[in-house]
Image (cartoon, rainbow, N blue to C red):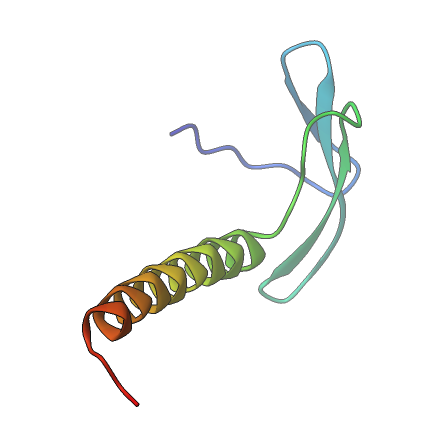
Length: 78
């Protein structure tokens, strides 16, 4: 991990295609502007984690439904 200090208006570059600029600081918050190709997804970490958790929950629910269907097929309910 690389840790840098930047002032408002200063940037860092990642490769040739990504530039991150500090646009504002206020207390413990920092505003960043990110310039990157459209093919590179940019999202807040908490949203990425929430999406991952939702996918895992959906997969678990689908597996549970498949297992329940399998059990119900073996039980003759009339």
